[in-house]
Image 1: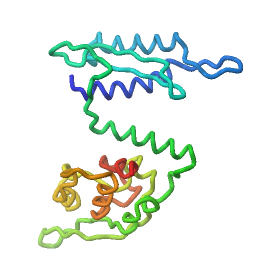
Image 2: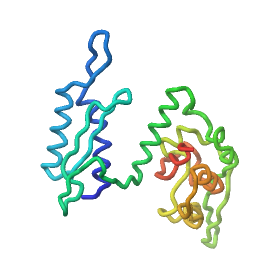
Image 3: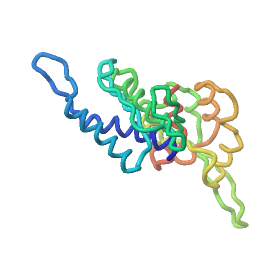
Image 4: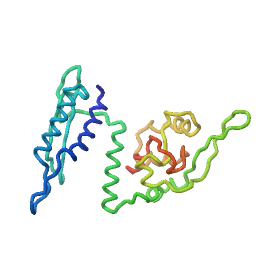
Length: 222
């Protein structure tokens, strides 16, 4: 079982905890989690491990910056049977995207960011980005044609993967080849430097027209 599955399970369990461990609201006091609800969450995780769906998990629930529930379940390595522990290291992969998205939504709640804000408001280089379209000639050759944006890329586009930004390791159109040739992931770049490099490349689609799994939340992190 891969560590990615363990981490994905951990995030899913945080969502589950919100439903299974409903907060109680004592009169005149702060909301607090139900002991019975937390027990249901614990039982659920234990069952997932017992039935072989995941090897282990770590579940932490915090309220107002303080932990209200923490437990390690199962093992972090099936071969060695090492127990899951607080110092277990997970490879995040794309799970950094929901973390960044949650942080962005916290800024929205605080009124410091709006979902319909153009990305160029925060990263001016995105004001001049173009959309790359493959056009085939009568001889079968392909020419990359750059078109202007029909509308600006918004913060919402970044969060829902409709910005037109893409990866360079899937697909065979000209834009994806440009991404691959740019070697975006080679080097130790800051977020701002990385976003500036992306802004020099054309989009694969017009903003808001198609969902493409890619690197948009990285721009949100800037």
